[in-house]
Image (cartoon, rainbow, N blue to C red):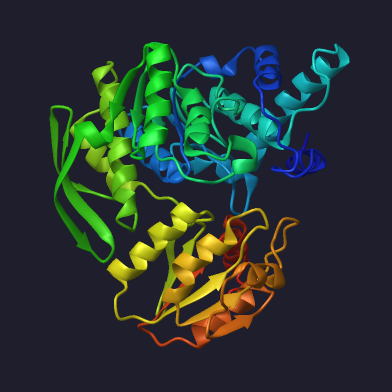
Length: 438
C-alpha cells in the first residue's frame, strides 16, 4: 500500500473517538499474527489525565541520550499521523509508515478471513499495532508508550513494561472511564503489572487509594512521588523552572524543566524518577544522560511559543485540570500583561468549568470553530457559560481568529490559543503551509 492508500484505509475505519473500542483481544490477535513485535524491545508506559505526553517526551529524550535507540508512541496527532511514532525524536517517514501499516493490514485481512476477528480494528488499535511494528522494523531497543485513554483496556497495555507511570487523576472522558476519581484511577491503574515498579504523581486521596490497591494486588513496587520526591531551590526564569531533587535516596542538582509552566515540574520529576528506576534495574542511564535529555526534550501543543511580539502560545489543554494549570500559569508568569484567548472546544468537554478558569483572566476572547465533527459551535459554548465575557468576538476560521487577536494586541501582550488539540493542530497546519500571517 502507498502512504495515501494507508491514510484512506485509516479514514475508512471511522473517527478515532467515535469508533473507540476497549479491550485487548483484537490488538493481541494482530500482534500475535505479526510475530509479537511488541516483545522485541523494552517498554515504559504512561497513563494519567494530564501530562502524559510531556512525561513521555521527556523520558524518551533521557533514554535516547543514554544511547538506546528509543521509540515514542503518543496520541493524538496535531497535523500528521506520522507524529505519533518517533524513533530518536524523528517522525516515522511516509515510506516507513506505509511499510508497517501494510504489514498490519495484511495481518488484519488474514485474521478476518480466518474468522479470528469479528470486525476490523478501531482507528486507534490499527495505529497502535502499526507503531509496534514500526519500532521493531526500525530496531528500537526501548519504547515509551502514552496510553490513549484509561489504561486497563487501552490498546497500548499489551506489553510488560519495565516501569509504569501515572501522572495524575482528574475528571475527563467520564462516559468511558467512570464518574468518580476512584473509578477513573482504577482504569488507569490497569497499566500496573505484577512485580514491576509503578511511579505515581497522584495526590488526591481517593485516586491514590485505588492505585495502591492495584499495586498491592500485583505485588508491584509503588513509588508515590508525594512521599519519596522532595523538591528544593525552585526558581523560575521566563516561565521555565529549575530545581534540586531528592528522590528516594538519590540527589539531583540544578535540573531544568524543558517545558513552560510550573505544572511541568511534576512531569519532569516523574520522567526523571522513571529513568532512575530503569537505571536501578540495570539500564545504563547516567546523571549526564538525564541532564542531556532534559536539555533537548520538547513537546508541541503545550504552552508552545510560535511568535514573540505579541507572544503567541499554543495550549491544547482540554479538561478542567489543564485549564486550572493554564490559569495558574497566566497569574504567575504573565502578571500585568494583557491576555487574549482564541478558544474552541469539543462538544463532549466540560466547557463551563474550563471557561470559568480562564475566561476571567482575558482581556478579550475570540471563539472559533476548527473543522472537526465533534467541535462545539460558538452557540453551544456560549450556552454553557454562566456569563459571557465582557469583550468577545466570534470568528469561525481559527487562522483568522488568531490573526485578529494578534492585530488587536501590543508587542508586550500575550495571545493564548487554548481549549482543543484540534484547534492547535489547525493553527500549526496553517503555519506549516505558510497561511498564518502574524
